Length: 301
Image 1: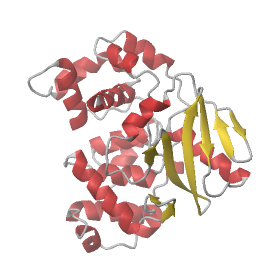
Image 2 (image 1 turned 60 degrees about the horizontal axis):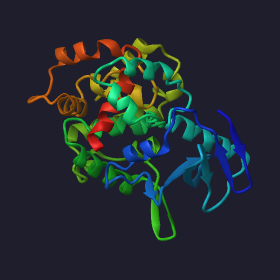
Image 3 (image 1 turned 90 degrees about the horizontal axis):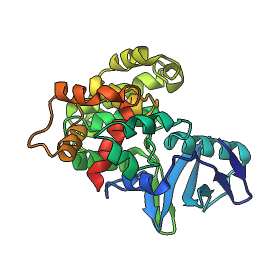
Image 4 (image 1 turned 180 degrees about the vertical axis):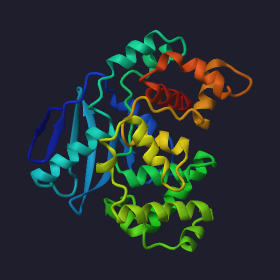
């Protein structure tokens, strides 16, 4: 991915199939989100790079992503990591030509692929965040999941205030490994979810699970390794595979949001059943995660 370093900012040249405004719609779907802020078409995010908190201010102009540093301009090695994070966050390394070819021939996806053209998988590069956010969302509605995340981040994450706005970084697994189940229970986590999240933090502290170890595994082995983690079922594994590991074949087929989107798009009286979804998804092979993501996007029109 080409990028250019300037004194006060960097410029990233994204793939041709990228539309920043479409990604902002997805990122702006909850008022309770605390890990980024959208203001005047700018996207603000606080990153932890080499133990330093760096606030970035991101804007698209004439097809170029401009990344500014409103507080302190980091050195070159940190800028490289900032660029790497943004490229992974917006899945810049994936060639979406195959997805659009498939979607153009699919009766259900064709209209969405045209309408949301340039939308890329907005990922979660941090494995601990991806796993624990997925666990927070298990068997509850999305607004309450965001409320839990807000309490979790504001209780255990680091923050920085700039021009009257406070920006947050997701808690580290090292911090959460020291937390007690009762502490999370006080934030309205169930006992089971509290145990799962603290357990994941502890195995990550031990080095048993790392993104570096997992990212080189082939699809089925990665799925199996994730499923061995206490609290990770089929849906959570599929979600983490698509959002953290960019596995385009990952398919969270039991996802409630997917079911709601299909019901809406197809004008059904009831949500489709799993065997019906499998039939609908026959043509999506290799791009199930993107098909799911575009269907999720359709819920925010």
